[in-house]
Amino acid sequence: MTALQFDLLATDPDSHARRGTLTLNHGVVQTPIFMPVGTYGTVKGVMPRSLEEMGAQIILGNTFHLWMRPGLDVMGAFGGLHAFEQWNRPILTDSGGFQVWSLGAMRKISEEGVKFASPVNGDKLLLTPEVSMQIQTVLNSDIVMQFDECTPYETQGRITTEAEARRSMELSLRWAKRCQAEFARLQNPNALFGIVQGGMFEHLREESLAALVEMDFPGYAVGGVSVGEPKEDMRRITAHTPHRLPAHKPRYLMGVGTPEDLVEGVAQGVDMFDCVMPTRNARNGTIFTRYGDLKLRNARHRNDPQPLDPSCTCHACAGTAGVPWADGGRGGFSRAYLHHLDRCGEMLGPMLATIHNLHYYLNLMREIREALDAGRFGEFRRQFASDRARGV
Ligand SMILES: CC1(C)O[C@H]2[C@@H](O1)[C@@]1(COC(C)(C)O1)O[C@@H]2CNc1nc2cc3nc(N)[nH]c(=O)c3cc2[nH]1
Ligand SMILES: [Zn+2]
Image (cartoon, rainbow, N blue to C red; front, side):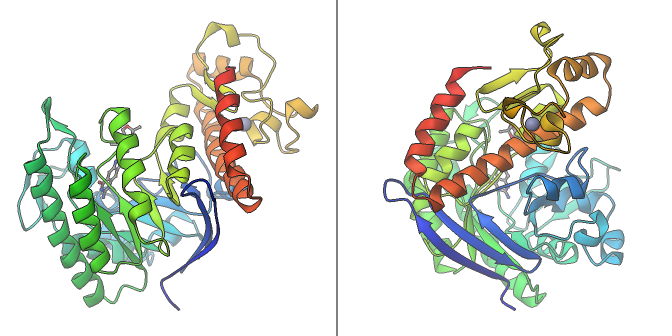
């Protein structure tokens, strides 16, 4: 069984967009795809069965957090993350470096790896390319991300220089080689992805990309974006790097993004996305809809009988029958009710909002795949932008 098989089904003549299938050890994924984030072994507030019903095909887990808690002994006893969290479809795990950095934990980076204090119990720990591979082997994730340094956009208000971005990118390349060696030594049966770094410098991105392609990974990610950089920088790197990656291998843009970022990313040749936005925003009352974003806490929703999105077929908007309000369905929950739950701090509020936001993201990717299958991605892109500009 090969760890990964990527088949291109269609490409858009007017952009870098493409339609594919990704066959992994735990199943087949239709691309382009959005991957819900399940950092601690759960997509916050959503049952695995609900994730399947809304069309989630692959979810994310995280090396760093699961290593801290529950720890490798527990994960090993379950044979990995799938049995532990009762998710039988593919899982992608990030390698831990970004999470140490994003925690802002006191950390020391050296050639060997990253030294830091555990945020759980203060233990002094060292995360290296080899340890990251060992943890991800125990987790048995279908896609393993290389251990890298996510080059920051800025540090204490000072923008990363070209020389600093080069040093960081070159360290990640040396760590990529070490990951490949350890992954092979462990005889991990899954797929290891390389991660392109290079900061906001196109020529460094090309150097990183060329070196990683030389190492012949089965798939690649573009890292070092969605790290607080200005939107135009993210758009510039997203327009530059993904389509330069090998066309016959999957391309993953890490940590991105808004619905607009996903449509733009697909147009630039990206196959896979993950982002905390649909789940995190749901918990703070920002709802994604076909016609723009909705702020649930706004008093105007206090007695609004409509669902979050009248065109939506999710359980929150259309109930188990799944008939949208716009087609006469009345089985869902109203904006008034969600507004009420939010004001009372009731846990059902974030749960329903999360179901809706994840369904919105997964449904958006389904509509993109259908448009690519039908050869009308350009028309879809224009309609999407005009609908979203209409406002709720
Ligand atoms: C820290 C936390 C939870 O991770 C999310 C989220 O906040 C937040 C904060 O603002 C938004 C944009 C909404 O997403 O930024 C994170 C999403 N951006 C992102 N994730 C990444 C993961 C990465 N992993 C590796 N191994 N290497 C990378 O270069 C890398 C780059 C990344 N960029
Ligand atoms: Zn909905």
